[in-house]
Length: 200
Image (cartoon, rainbow, N blue to C red):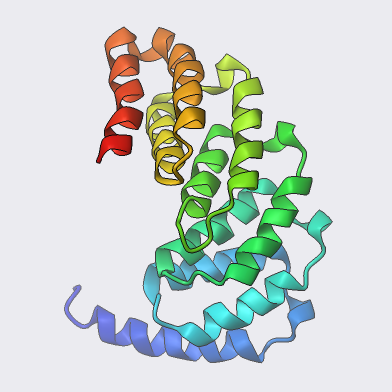
């Protein structure tokens, strides 16, 4: 039953947290750090020790050891836990600038743009690079049921970052890609999101 679950989880996460901070930095890979951060963001977002320690660990890692999915998972988990460590976000932004554009997916861009549009870690130069990658993306990438959600998150992120012109030009490109899959009406409704967010 769900009754006592919270109590057990708290004690478990407390214990796990002690293990996490006891391990040496060299014991972690970007992937293991990302998985642990996600678990704590989902289950114990108030565990400052873990987020601070893993932030330190991640900042020491070489840029070439990261892939886009791992960076996206890290920035998303830190965002959801409400931990906006500006030096961590700056480091991961540098890593993102070095990752080959072809490895970015629509969903990873949505996740990263959403995190970096927050005013506490706003990074317009990174958002600019992501917009360029999006403009060059093959229309075939912008398909599938998740695409509508991803595009909506992306347009919201640029509007939130006060990059309205970029948001509008992206809305034209991305909604044109979506039209064959969702019908003109939905594509038009999505283009309106940007205007709505801008006026909100």
